[in-house]
Length: 155
Image (cartoon, rainbow, N blue to C red; front, side, top):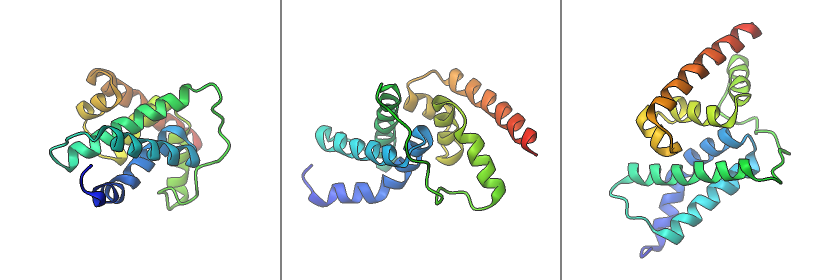
């Protein structure tokens, strides 16, 4: 990295996106922060050449998602801290919906988060998660049905 301000700009631009994705996958604020830091460290070590900000964001998200998967597989992983109350949900209905989304398994949470919160298309999500596009589409369909059922049961 030739420009010392480049990393600072990269962090300011992408840290919130990476944090939200990691928090959605891991369900733990502290582990999400660590996963984001690991992604930026990987950027420093590898210094990938990305033609634009969209490719940078996709590269960092891919590294973050892979890091989260590794953390989930880790045998000593423990959930000790709940997500902060400042996670983006303002009304009680939104809190209930967020709780239902967070109750999904990690792969489903990641897919839902990347599609609805980050605005990625299914082909992009498939590339980020390292899965087939059809798998992502069917997972989204199953998640929608699960969420619909869970939210209507609560009401």
